[in-house]
Length: 141
Image (cartoon, rainbow, N blue to C red; front, top):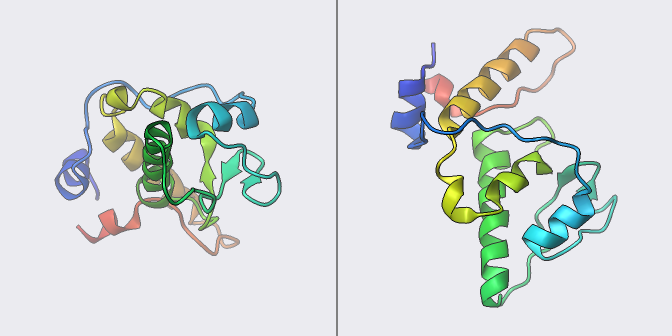
């Protein structure tokens, strides 16, 4: 059984603080432009409410640096902490939580990670399920 203690010891994620919850009804183009500085092409980098992070410029300005940081943290959230089964897309619902980077660390990412892992494990029991999302290396504790 994986516990919050495992999450904080293995990942160093906060297990107290503000809950990781936000509304998901956004204009994703507008949100991407505001927080990432770019509107990814629909169907290519932006698919529904998920994004592929292949579009980042090479030499950023200071503003682009913050946008890169948001994109990098978003990549960690969607690619490590709360991995889904798509393998290469990240849900944008976490992006508003990164609007103010100094506040992003106040959220309870550890509990969200553990809840996501258990939800994915519940989904994986169905015979039609071929993959499992979630931070699976926590299962090795």
